[in-house]
Image (tube, rainbow, N blue to C red; front, side, top):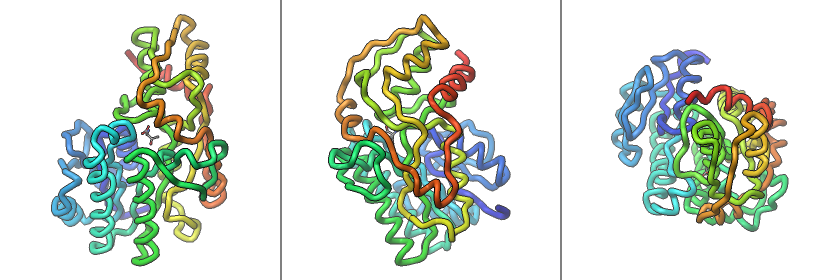
Length: 310
Ligand code: AKB
């Protein structure tokens, strides 16, 4: 797509750091404005932006004549339980501000990252359907579920083009994520390479849906590029990569690093993981915009180990 100017909030996060670079390959370096509350060493336009200050967001939108926003700034599930009010402010109030600014400033398209964290104990755990019971137990899940509803509202009432994905746990080597419940998967790779041992904060048999970063990027760009006529949901699309337990991941790593060892000391994150789904039905995304993942557990493990350089 030509002539787009894209603002990415939360650009220093796990997804932001990779997505900004990929967007810049497609739209040109100067057309992708990275922003974050902390400074960045990414090469290209960058704005220090406190997402809780709508006036600052507005001046960035106007300064660069922004046409699309990827609103990635968020506190994740585990950190959200430590700072519930701040999580509401960042994850939900700031998103509402962005929706309102997008309406006023005629922003063409918005991306809102949702999550498997919107599911809860009343959600079917296996092959969780697109439309089901949503009773999340974390503040993070509440904010993301409410954000999805607000997105649908702004689409129905004001015609905004909102697109959203419910990301599974994201595995990547470019940075070590913080504040999530699925972070263990990335930590395990780094500790395997660095120390040959990992102590996992979830129990061995905790099954969760995961996805590898290249699939996150292709899903996100594919959804954002799809013609509006193909998009039947403004709420988050379910997408799935592969579902794994810590024990299965450690076995996959051991195939490459035979001396790797693991032990388990579940902490408060276990309760969060237990309230989430085991696996996801993503047939709606496959049907609407041809989604399908390229990486399974074995392919992801090999690529992670090839790329972690410590
Ligand atoms: C988290 O663990 O909080 C996130 C997520 C699944 O959205 N990675």
